[in-house]
Image (cartoon, rainbow, N blue to C red; front, side, top):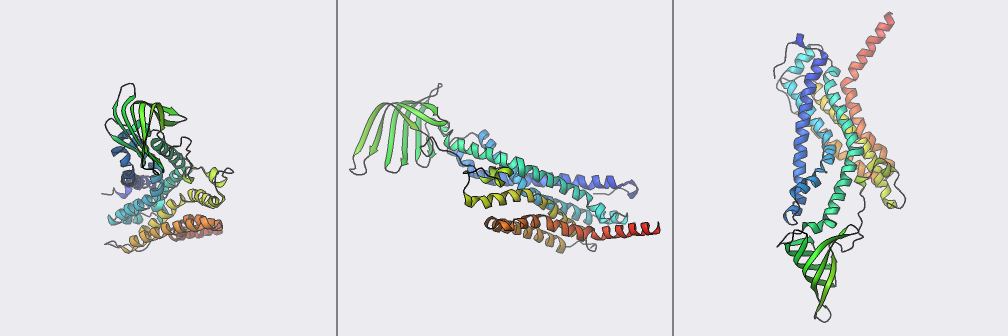
Amino acid sequence: MRLPRLSQFSPSRLDRYILRQLALALIAVTGGLVALIWLTQSLRFVELVVNRGLSFRIFLQLTSLLIPNFVAVILPITTFVVVQFVYARLAGDRELTVMRAAGLSPLALARPALVLAAFSVVACFLLNIWVVPASFGAFRQFQFEIRNRVAAFLLQEGVFTPISDDLTVYVRARDPDGTLRGILVDDARQKNSHATILAERGQLVSHDGAPRVVLFNGSREEIDHLTGRLNVLTFAENSVDLTQSGKSEEQRFRDQTEMSIGELLHPAPNTVADRDIPKLRVEAYRRLASPFTAFSFTMVALVSVLMGAFRRNGGLLRPTAAVLAVVGLLALGLAIASLAAKENGLIPLIWLEAIAPGLVCAWALLGRQFGLMSAGLSLKLGSV
């Protein structure tokens, strides 16, 4: 890209020029990676569409609830990638050289990247504290309802529908009013009572939020494992629970990913086991500290591209070192979180790992400039 004449540039225009490229690249890279991760993670739910008749619309609604978590995880990484790439391209096109020749300091050159990092930090805070817990809670509730509450409505005509691994339902026809005809139920949820149920017709109902099918004019066939005899019981009316466990009172227990910061730090009595409290605290502090990694990763990239002597042909040493540093920080963060879950006294290390690298890089990149500014201010005050 051709750089306009120096006389046309002002600091604000330069900031907008670089920031525009950073923002567009961040949107493109983050969007592409989120789409790729969503595609790979959603494959485990394809079975609900292929084998259980789940509509594609509901499939999209279910899997889209995972997207906020993907964004929260990869946004600090994509911020680093974008800053590293855009500034390296500016250096390769000699644009950074021209800007430096125009008298721009490292702080002025780094300012657009710092604005982008601030946006990423704020976005990660919003995602970690509010959006991700809410979306995870909605996802798990939706998934629970599909597998244990709405499973009955996945029944299709002329298809053996596996409600679960040990419950299969066949329906020959389904009338417009919802009446089922020609019903076969293979129920192996009880280990010692594998039954096959046949009925002329039936009706889907809901009892305490759990799906049931009321059967009319049918029979229940079951083999006695002790005698080997086939026991047949005919009935005029019977009902079968269609939840996976066969228990309508089944409840869904909340995961730590669904809890708010307050619930993680101060869980309600008798809702979590004592052994899980340290893990909840680590999760809370991880959510609060991890957004600062976007700042730290940005500073690592800026040190890579703005420090050191200019090379006409570029170089791979500094970008490789920056990538390895970020990978090392990610691995270190996982290790510290694992250790802190066992020993809560190590929780301050979570904050240290998230913030300290950025402060160190900021001092390495901008410390000299601040020192010169301080010295100049001291000389002015002395002359006065």
